[in-house]
Length: 391
Figure 1 (cartoon, rainbow, N blue to C red):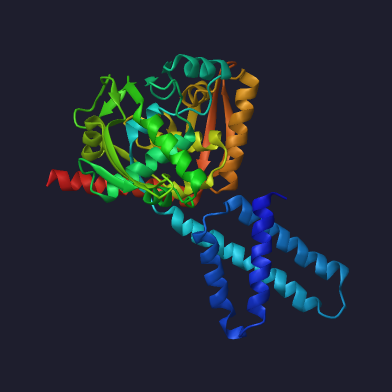
Figure 2: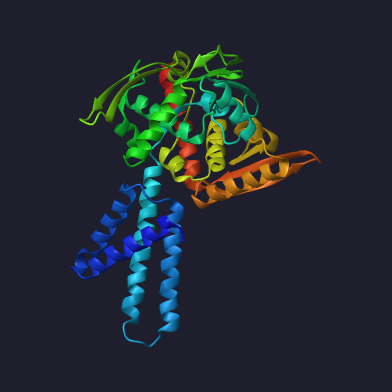
């Protein structure tokens, strides 16, 4: 049992015991409040909830199996049943939160200037030299540069998308204004020293990252182009609040994204991602696969990768997009592990590998019904925006 699972089970048991001592007519309301509270704490993943549900289900069955006919059996079994229902309610609230979506420029998703893989040798050399340049293929070809010699990770991608969400709230204005607390809130992270440190490091990495998107799609002209090299963040400034000990308590930031990104978003070339879903995914490979197929869904030539409600992506392109440099056997294992988690959190219904000849192999992903509805919502928004432009 993981620490988060143990903490969740103890929390639920403690609160349910209190409830059962109170007014029975308030029980359902209190169950709802507890489920909402668990969600607001942002401490647990869907996997923790599912573990807890199975735990309480087994405890309930064990009571009937080993204590049948004993005094208090029904009461004990009911206790575990209520615990289970609270976690089921928590998952329901999580599903509602998953519907909160943010706009991300589609070229960013399909070119993927963040990395799941990357060899230790490559990373060590970049840090030693204080500069790194990478040309990678995949769904789209990208040239990546970082003046610190560091590769962006999926944690940095999370920060980037949270910034996009704040930017959207502010109408994609010239400058994006935010506090560290506000950004952590967008990322569903509790505020604390460790989180602030990680956030500042991530912002510094993003500030030092430049990219060339070699197959950028211009929705206005309907053509692909090679962009000029541009920084993700072209300008930034911040003010600090310092306490009496000389320690930074908080920072107020103002940043500017590249005009290229701003123009593309305003033209309507964007995808919708759920930060709640992204935060719920623990394995980096799973995060990368999620972002990849969300981006593909809004590509101009998505028919190359979609068959009905299924995504069929050549496996080599998956490896290149995620920049997984392991040998072919390890690479495939990483993809399987990532897809298994996407099933666990309810993003995909199933996945499998499709063979097309001796060497050609594709990854097939089948989104769940509610994930398909989120995908469809983007299509509907696109139709509305197109109609408004035509008027």
